[in-house]
Structures are given as C-alpha cells and as structure tokens.
Length: 86
Image (cartoon, rainbow, N blue to C red):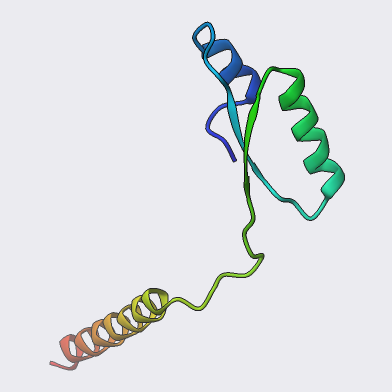
C-alpha cells in the first residue's frame, strides 16, 4: 500500500515531472487492471510491477530470530521460576 493516494501524488508533482506508480500484482487481475487504468487517466506514465509470493520464503534470518526468541523466552521462564523458589 502506498503512503499517498494516486490523486495526492498528482497534486504534489511539479510541472513536467513524470509520474511513476508501483503496482503490486493482485490475485484479482481485474482489480489490478482498474488500478493501472486509473493511474494512466491521472497522468502516470511509468509503472513498476512488483510480484511477490503469497507465502513468506524460508529465510535463515527469520529462523535465527525465531530461535533467539524461543531461547530468551525459556531463559526468562527459568529465571522467573528460580526467583520464586527461594
């Protein structure tokens, strides 16, 4: 999702400034087509098509973060248990 609407971008542009729109390929291709046609009607001349997968990839960084989160949680539980034992 953009931080601004297409109309807000058009309103903020300088005279002669080209407009580019980043569009995400949606499962609903008709909706994607409508968004592109709207952008063209507003004066956008360049497009960047972003195609992402619906599922997150298996990234090593995410696996490490999950492991770290699990270890911290376990360590916290152990510390809390030890505090109440005495």
